[in-house]
Amino acid sequence: MLITGSKYYIAQAVTGQLISGGAAPGLHCWHFCCRLPCCTAGALRPEKRGNVVGWQALFAKWFLMNEQQTGTLPSFDGVADAFVSLGALGSPAELHGMACGRLCGGGRYTDQEWLQAAMDFLDVARAPDAEAQSTMVELYRTTLEQLRDAEMGIELLLPEDDVDMPQRVMALSQWCQGFLSGFGTSGVSADTELSGDTADALRDFAAFVQINPEAEDDEDSETDYMEIVEYVRLATLSIFMELGVDADEAAENPTLH
Image 1 (cartoon, one colour):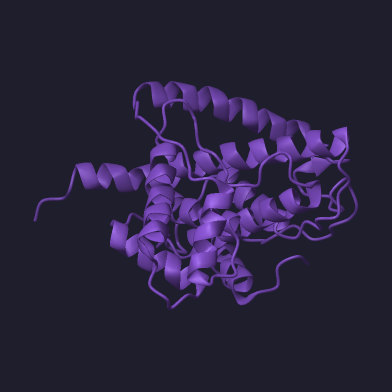
Image 2 (cartoon, rainbow, N blue to C red):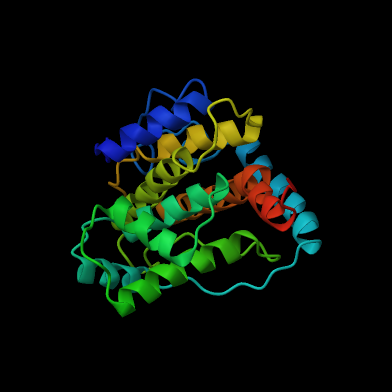
């Protein structure tokens, strides 16, 4: 298993209450040394590809009625530089996954609340300097903007395409790890009834955490990797639409007492 830290098991314990059955067992070999529950011979299964197409059509219709402007995420290397200034050993991908997971579960933060949540997640006691603060706040604000984006513009904070494939696969695994951790601590009740698509996506994310990063830099691996990234991206939007949008609507229409 790639990630064996305590946050992985916390995320599994929390999300396991919501997605009965947990991560699919029996991970075997494919291009990334992992036969995932959504994949066959290294490619997305037809039903999962159908999910992607269906999500694209649904999002296009919904976001036309909810147009928002969006910015660009800080670069992976820029966030990594902020980590260096903090003395943090975590992954930029994992932190961004955590932000997406919390937002998809309905969590919302002021800038200071987010900075504290990020420092807690990274297990860092040192206060961030002005540049690191700016990068962290930009990461959070832009992530929320992108989840609301009319153009389905949510990006996953992953290494650039010229980085070796094993490092990119590891970062994708860490992103999914962060998402599960963030979603599990977002305040979603264990009694929440999830749609089948959301429960399946969370199980798939849990399986992606266990990807072995040994992968060759060839055309097949590149295609498989990009297909999985797109699945994770659209699955994230789907979960946000199901659960995260409610937090925006509640903020816009507070209950009167």
